[in-house]
Length: 204
Image (tube, rainbow, N blue to C red; front, side, top):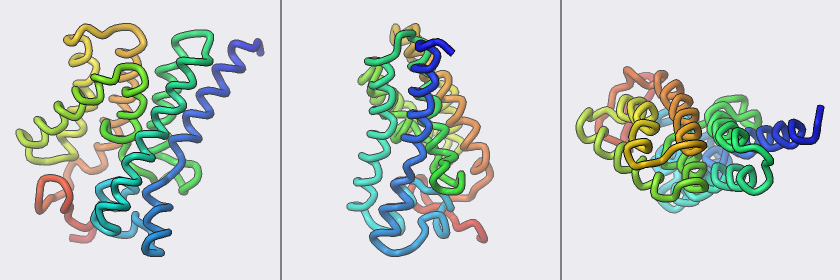
């Protein structure tokens, strides 16, 4: 294996391992000695952290989840010898967040405002605001956050193209968007009391 491929493989592995850092799980355990996945939505997410451990813990998780997407993507931009590695690193980070090796492959949802958002922030800072805007709009229109997130994942690449982006940015949001869409299929039929923070429990 030549050095270029070895470098690419190392960066992609770094992306997955970074994404696998399950901060929602660890912060909630530190705060309350409970598993965040045992209540609420059943996922290791910022919103589920807020439900169980409060806004302070949720903000910490949100910032850390953004960081774990941003750092490997930024390193890929800095260290990679070929551009195609950058979107693959971002996809690996989001996949790690959703299916983390450090948490029995039961993680978060990879939403654009967290790990995917951090990856987008590294390559196109305005893109994070575009993604959040699309998500909020779809949540208000569809009134079901899982379905809105599914369609947000699929709409990121076309939306970024409309804003004049191309190349690795489009490939990055296409790849991470597909992972987001696939992840949210599991919540497609979940019932909600409110639009965002108050999901029904699994047994209801």
